[in-house]
Length: 264
Image (tube, helix red, strand yellow):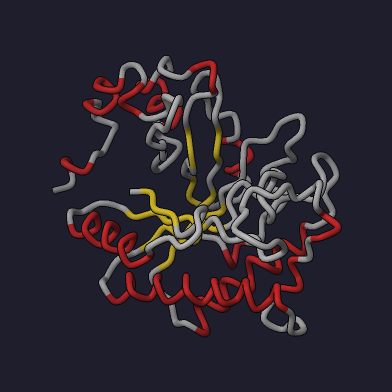
């Protein structure tokens, strides 16, 4: 089950956790992302281009040892709220595949790269990741998190997926997000070089493949190479979900697909 602690303002984290707890009790896996609020701009605006607004972004000002500021207070307040919610899951016995700051090698989130081809904020991003890691594990004593580094597939305007990697000590699983025309796993060799368990962070069809994405081929490209893949539900005017595309029954019934009913 994929859950999110952000993207929209005032997400009900208690309700979100209950979905996770119920799914865990059934034998399912729980993965949580956090579309953190943009601390550098008023209102809730996650999708704030990190390259276009690089002069207004200083992620090091958000660190625990940074000087006091309104942006630091805003960020660390939300960080604390997230940590307490994760602690509730720990108290319930739930292990969380924790996937923060995803797609960091893109520019479409405020925590992303500050240039499409020659970014210079790798060290700053690594410091932000490590700060979260230490805050959660040392200050809040969280021991139920499996840390997932999940960049986007590299391309002409998207740097190599390993560029923003924060280091082996702070990552348990490596992943990649991809929305191609046809299923592929072109980043497999790049992920292998990081020497971690490999999964897919997000997969789904590009717009031109809505409703035509071959789900059996999704399984085939990941089979024996990725421990799991994650596909979104559809939304308005977007046929992204498994059941809205082709060969989904064949995929779900394939022996290589370990679905929830098969682990009960």
